[in-house]
Amino acid sequence: MPSANLSFPPDFLWGAATAAYQIEGATQEGGRTSSIWDTFSHTPGKVLGGDTGDTACDHYHRWRDDVRLMAELGLRSYRFSVSWPRVQPTGRGPAVQRGLDFYRELVDELLAHDITPAVTLYHWDLPQELESAFPSGHAAGGGWPERDTAHRFAEYAGIVAEALGDRVARWTTLNEPWCSAFLGYGSGVHAPGRTEPVAALRAAHHLNLAHGLGVQALRAALPARARIGISLNPSAVRPLTASAEDLDAQRRIDALANRVFTGPLLKGTYPQDLLTDTAHLTDWSFVRPDDLAAIKQPLDFLGINYYAPAVVSAASGEVDPSAPRRDGHGDSPHSPWPGSESVLFHHAPGELTAMGWPVDPTGLTDLLLQYTAEAPGVPLFITENGAAYDDKPNPDGSVHDPERVRYLHGHLAAVHQAIRAGADVRGYYLWSLLDNFEWSYGYSKRFGMVYVDYETQARVPKSSARWYGKLAATGELPEAED
Ligand code: IFM
Image 1 (cartoon, protein in one colour):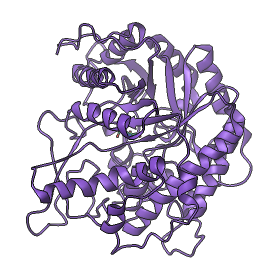
Image 2: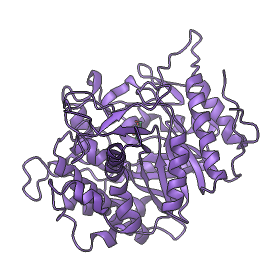
Image 3: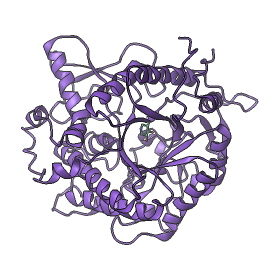
């Protein structure tokens, strides 16, 4: 579609995002100890090709060059995560000053280049010690199914806020708690790799609680100008047909993907249908009386991470548990959908990215308008959006990625459409600044607008990076290349 006249508001924030474990490397330096992702990636068979985050993009040593590159590309904001085990190696007690210093220097460098830092406190790298703790005698482990982890997170949030609060105004508590809970403890394709449906539901609640307690700790430590939110990865769930069965499948997945978080965060309740759908698994007595009030904290913004919609149907017959679920979240015989394991996932029509995810920007417009209605008055940010493609350097070393430009163009046009329809969207962070460690896919999937040669650690901006830089400079959506 021609993009003439697609101008974004003048103060719209254009940025790129990364996460600590995906780019930093240096996993045993500066006093850092293992996170659940170090343990998981070092467990044979868990990550494609046996890849680990040990070196990743070596950002821990190359951060100055990476900030310079961001400035050259014209980015106005950088969203990164703090590695919990770098700052508080055991997940409790005093912080390691070297860990805090790393992030202070990074923030100072960003500010010196006029790039607004946006800090995410938790992007999946739980200190291993907290997972290995067995506070209530659970045989399989501690971690997010345990209440204490929420309190540990609030303590950690306060520590980071004290250290960076004079320089950082944008704070996100958790990134995509759905993945932490349901991929980490349900299907087991993410760390810590547990496959216990009830633990996944308990984890979801304790992540919600961690957010609520974390917001309180941040507000206590930060100046009033600080803006605090959370990044969710809501699913734009569509029924395959309009049959009552498929609509029920849609309702079930919407409850487990979306409302399990937005219910308590925005309304202070868990949805009744979710409690009913999972009643054969748990009575939810792990939700204590004051928890919901603690979780429903005022939000200064809501972060939305969007990649693709989901199309679901009811199973029409016997379900083969070993058949691929096609929900886009990796291969596992275990479902990440407790109580709704029989729901079938289908590809939305159209082109697929290298992740096998359909390209369908309409889901982004839908979600932005949905959250405009559900969270009135709360500004929205797209805190992640992007696509993996099989990018390869040309003989002259350049990297041309027209598919990514088309993906970005389509999704930014969808954001523009939502703004025109009344959504208060304040910024967009492209996932990702650099090619990086794509979790259980290792280094096989490239999401970066900057190509990383993992042998030499050379960074090569792809053509999408130049395209995006033009957008950041002008606020006008450039045409997609042919
Ligand atoms: O790489 C991830 C990121 O860590 C969280 N959101 C989705 C991205 C692509 O899978």
